Figure 1 (cartoon, one colour):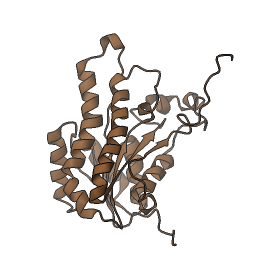
Figure 2: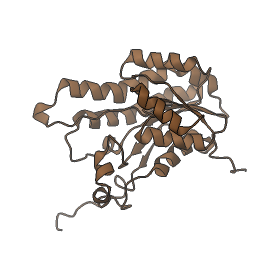
Figure 3: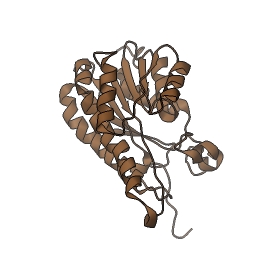
Figure 4: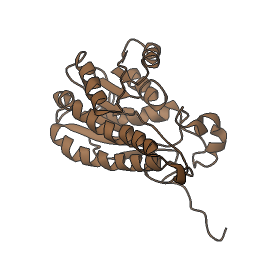
Length: 262
């Protein structure tokens, strides 16, 4: 047994949606450091191009809005102009919406459910041929859905569609995994906790305060997210299928409940 290159991604091609910032950018940087060629996509072309330039010559920008099925198909077509096969797809693009129950709108419901649930499914479908061309029993292709601990437990905010979407994506990961494993494509997910980002402004702007509620007593850093993604994307994670890895400093699975006698 040789574990020397267990986590390397040399020669592998990855596509990461929402890859220009936050968790997507953390994963992109990690993949590149392990030898991968990474395509990043995001809605804003200028931001996408700037992030690719920052990440270096092994990062290529493919700006696209994947909130619609047409956008998913367009991104797959853009990718096909560059590559004939895809080794790793990271479905990271997402949105949140927090409004009191009485005021929660259909717009806030549809925007979040479309981007967080519908898009990962239809983008994977659009890239199925490219993923299938890469995958083999010896070295499967990978699809990694970025879910959330908010799909595993409640947060204090009224983010109804976000909670529902992330719970749905965790279960959709299992269903997609059961089908796509027959094509040598492994589907998994990562459920992040508190990481500083534009989506998680509390962790970004009040990290010390947020950390007090986390068993590890800190918010997540880039290496925490990159490490989990590299594991699933590399040879190290080839026997992990349909699983959701929770990366949250113990908040979901290692928090003690409050006693009613306390």
